[in-house]
Image (cartoon, rainbow, N blue to C red; front, side, top):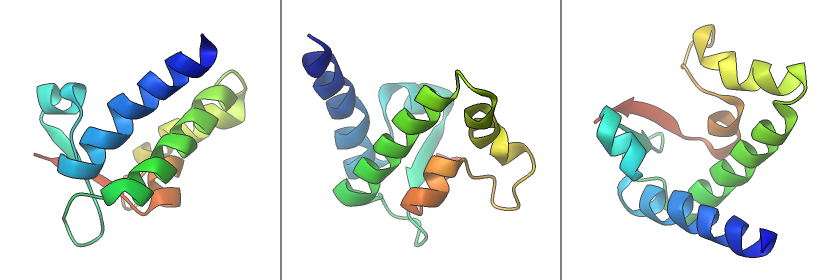
Length: 93
């Protein structure tokens, strides 16, 4: 069951992010994920971003993970750690 939930979550985040830069949630709030050239990040970057996000979420139970999620508050490029890892940016759509 955990494997199926993980695969469903990965499909929800990776596929639409790779193709258009937006999940339903990102579309609803008017943002999208892009690569450094402004295009959709593709499957490799989206997969790396997803894995980084899962790692940060797992670490969020500890304070160090929270720092990675709050990093955009003081980062020059406004990136979380999983965005830095994947080389992606979140911009207005």
